[in-house]
Length: 217
Image (cartoon, rainbow, N blue to C red; front, top):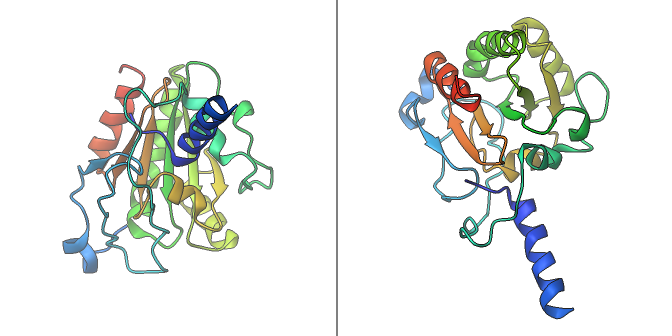
């Protein structure tokens, strides 16, 4: 289980208070293998960005994950609360309490509008999201768009048919950094008890299989 850095910082402050009172073919060789799975902000291992385009997302400078006895009690809603206050592509402000309920799992899709691999997997994301909702599974999808203008992001969503998914705008890359996302597309899979795993540039079958595991399918 991986805890995003802001939650760990909050836990540390609480403890002190108690004690003191897409890649295209050109970059294929540099990119991780499609089944590469890592933990958000925990290993410190760099993830190569195989897509040519704007500068890489900010690197995570976390020095390590908390030990088993140091992890705060969190759930999927607590993890998603890290996005509270970000703008959504639909013009609203994101609020985790209106998106996630108790017992929900979350799929966070980190994408960039210029990324060809993001564009290629977008129809699969839309299909899986729609199918799970129709089947009554409690899996919430949130797109986290970065490395581009709002207009470019809106064009991406419109042309890929992913408009039914809620998308937030990570304009300064802070949300990407919180989860140690260094390339795109990356999926942060969050279980109802708050465990986070990153799935980097998966193919369709890998993505479907891993998402199915979130709801026991």
